[in-house]
Every structure is written in structure tokens, then in C-alpha cells.
Length: 230
View 1: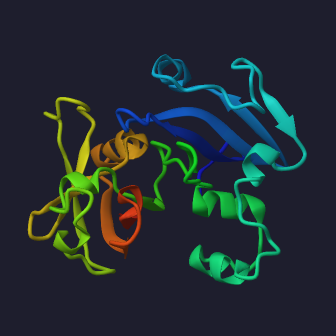
View 2: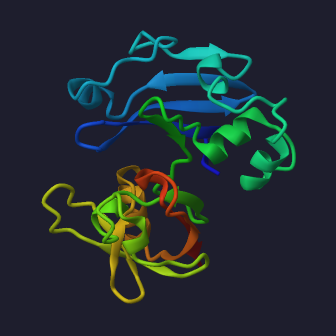
């Protein structure tokens, strides 16, 4: 959980549909009430085509509310769904809690290119995160279509994180390999710098396959579980 100055944070991420590059464009915080404000890479993202959310149309304003903003709560499954217990169980939740479900699920929808992520702060000592690796369709041998030809992975299988400073697109890139050396994809860009900073401070990580589903989208094919090792 990402807490700082008594606030719990989620970062708003936008993925450019053309380049598939992730941009951090804002932060949602909780401390009794809720706050949302644009920041970080918002100007770069707008230059690439990101449009401000209808509910938050002022780039300089700090929005405040006593309840979770409908712009985010509306992205969650209805608590009255027949299968809601199954959905909550998937995310390790025993009861319906909007903010925790938002944090666990990322509120991803198939109709747009935004999600909310639990950030990793560079001074965190205890790190425990789940995330989908980026770009697996380019490395699994399936070409994004031939799922039966993809490299096989097992839940619980360890994977390695290897820094790639000579990456021409992103010098902070961290690639994900299985123990046979097969390249599976990359750590999402929004986690790169924090993980690299942690590594530089001597923190080691354990990373294992949490989900491997060949029958889902290429953006949600391999979920991994990352934990710091003290």
C-alpha cells in the first residue's frame, strides 16, 4: 500500500493507443475524504493525444470530495451483481470496499486506455505489488494471436528482473525473464524508476508468476507478484 504524509495514493495511468507507452497523468489520494489532481507527465501525455477526463476538466485544479469520485466508482462492478463475491475473492477482498477494489483491480475497462495503479515510492522498504508485465506478445512467440505457441509458464514460477540501461527507447527499462533466460516482457514503465532506485539501495526482489492466461488480452496475459526481500 502506498502511503505518504498520511495519505493513501493511487496514480492515474494513460496508455497511448498508438505507441502503447504508459504516462502517469495524475494522483487520487485518500485521507478521510478524496482528492484528485493532474500532474507528473500530464503535459507530455496531452502532447501525445491524452484528453482531460470530463469530470476533471481543469488541469490546475485540486478536486476534493467526501466520497469516491463517480468518475472512478462508476468503473467498478456493481455491488449487487450476482457474482460479486467471486469478483471480490479474485482480488483477495472479503467485503465490498470501493477504494480497495479500485486499488486491487485498477478499474481497467475495455473501452478506454486508463487505469489506476498502486505506486511504488522510491523510499519504500517493504514492497508488495501485483502487475501485468508489458509487451508479452512481442516475446512469447505467439505474435499476439497464436496463443498455443506461446512460452509455457506456471503459477508460482519465479522470474527474474534484469535492468536494461542500453534500451534505446527507455534507459530505465527492466526486462522480465524466466529462469531459462526467455524474455517475457518488461516491467511497466510506471514502476521502473522506483524499482531501480530500490535496487540501488540494496533491496532485492522476489518475483513470481501470479497468473498466466492465454485466453485473455495480450495486455493482461502474465501477472506477476513482486515482493521486496529484506
